[in-house]
Amino acid sequence: MGTATMNEQIGFIGLGSLGAPLAQNLLASGRPLTLWNRTASKAEPLVQQGARLARRPSEAITGGGVVFTILWDDSSLEEIVRSEGFLDALGTGGVHVSMTTVMPETARQLAALHQAHGSSYVEAPIFGIPQQAVARQLMICLGGPGPAKERVRPLLEAMGGQRIFDFGEAIGAATATKLVGNFMIISAFAAMQESFEVLKASGIDPKPTLDILTTTLLATPGNQRYAGYLLSGMNPIGMSNIPFKDTGLFTRFADSAHTPVPLAKQLREILTAAKRA
Image 1 (cartoon, rainbow, N blue to C red):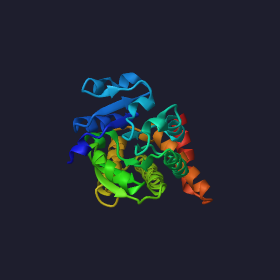
Image 2 (image 1 turned 90 degrees about the vertical axis):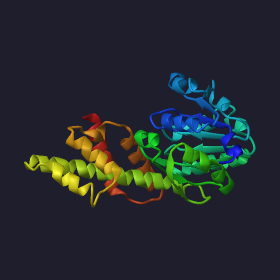
Image 3 (image 1 turned 135 degrees about the horizontal axis):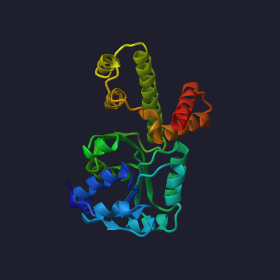
Image 4 (image 1 turned 135 degrees about the vertical axis):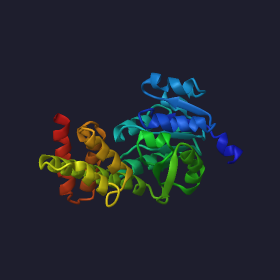
């Protein structure tokens, strides 16, 4: 790994459940890291390990450097990008890597805004959970200008990107893949939960069925994890706001393409009921 890559000045904004282990991995790789988080106390463990804490988002950026953001949604991402001094601090040649799950149109608008300021916007949404970040087993979808992607790829690998899929230079496809992927994952979870309830109500032990299916036809880490939740007595589909948020993004994406998605809208109703339960 080249010295230039190791000495890359990196800003990192957003220390939520996934952002924190990503930043930890970057710091552990020896990169100099400057952090900003709305709740500053969340940065303290990383500061104790040598990271610097910025007072505002723009101060997490070194001119011409790289800044990563991993935030909640479109509005929180736009708020950061349009905050005072952010784009000016990034400057000519700077790269902003957005890992937030957003609408493709939002990504395209922000990419155009960066281009107008002489910097590059790279979309890099993640498939994975915090435990997979710690284990460095993340899948990352990558889109944006070629030189910017080459520059940040070693950093994505350092933060836990086990597999990185390049969607070319046009912004939108990587973000759309994240929305579609999340919709399919959440749909599978809902189907598994309904199947589990039917088996249980019929007096049939659901464990052998779920064990077989999640190690053959439905053999994904997510399905196996979700089956474990169900078998341990948890009802996880309503425990997090993320499925509700991401399903809403997918239906908005479909609406923007004037495409009916009855399954997605039914799933959103299921999630709404689960949130109220």
